[in-house]
Length: 128
Ligand SMILES: CC(=[NH2+])C(=O)[O-]
Image (cartoon, rainbow, N blue to C red; front, side, top):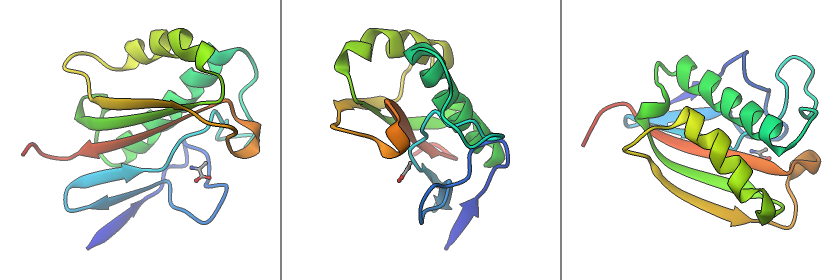
């Protein structure tokens, strides 16, 4: 049994995927690029503005599922330039608080639509 989660406050999928799927109490959210949900375009500005947009998109999807950042159990951060690591961490720390979710951060050669950061989360609707 699975349920599609669709938020109008987050950007529409740019390919054949859902924004998120809820299955067995776990929310699997697709990676969020720094796309503006209204314009469908990449956020202007520096990496901090772009990471903020990614996390605002994540927030909209979590809220659509009745969840919040404290329900997130795993995050993957994709960067095209690892020199953005510190700046993205600074933004990230505004959204997550201890105990932090597990996380991986990886550098990739490229992201869709020319993005420089993409953030993907998995969240749990109930503990254990
Ligand atoms: C942007 C994204 N999540 C994808 O799979 O293309």
